Figure 1 (tube, rainbow, N blue to C red):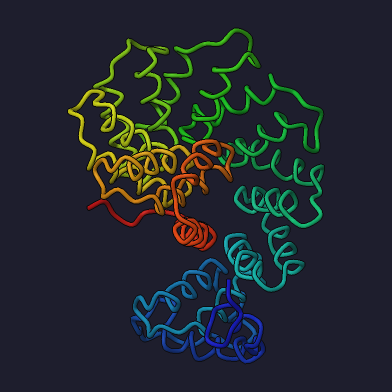
Figure 2: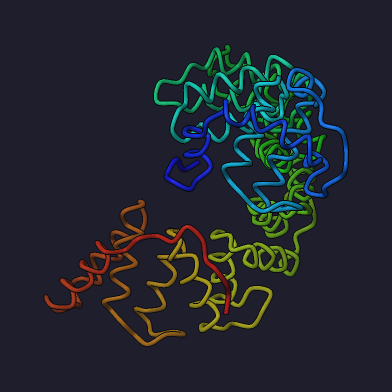
Length: 372
């Protein structure tokens, strides 16, 4: 969260809470706690007012001010009422304040999260687990404590995180079977990331013999929830006949679903299908399109593919400079160095200098906004 002037973090840091408390009398007298719709009612005395209102009402009023629902939008007013709710012991408000404070005052954020967590607020417990395991000096043992508390309350992400810690031996002795039990629990609750991880485990011997049928089952469940990573997993199962009958048309369909979700692995795979004419007509222009979209995200296989097309002039204008650029980028990730060096022998010094400049200037895109 930002703490600059005008942002939520700034107002939480700089507002006068004492003024907020005094303003309660005004709030009660006009019935603002009915959330923006004034009602005639007798104003309680100053001593009675704070005790008469549930802190949850403060929190809901604060959210309304932040969203501008029923009242004029005001970050300062929203911050004021949410802070009062947190100080009044409402765990959701304490968790909210903790998240706000994480950006500029981590120690205070942890204290608010702890206040909520001690009231069995599962999201706060899971967040503490994350904070303790992802800081500059991770405290995995403490992270495990908080993740376990949230996992006991069936918090999906806590189950997943705790499973990973057992799998990797962070804060606990490495225990693949316990990790699998927790992954299975999270997957059964519908957590798609856990379903993908469980599928991956079934493709190894960590749970005994490799089980392609179980892997395919969990990958498909995750893909049905539109998990981006799962699309390529399901497609590869169909392509290789693992856990299901081999079906290149189905593989193509799932790669296409993943490409629509802008997954780089699926985009690169579609490039391969179009280049080789697998389950579709050979179409070098389409191959170049999908290779390029994935290559721009940093996928090394796609970088190799688009370089191949640029070198041969298939689906794109022959361009040794672009071909070298993509080969150089792929080589930095461990593939294509020999092909790059062979291509360099066919290039002029100026072409080579330009290609190296383009490669050095490349910044991978985190995602592709749209397919055209």
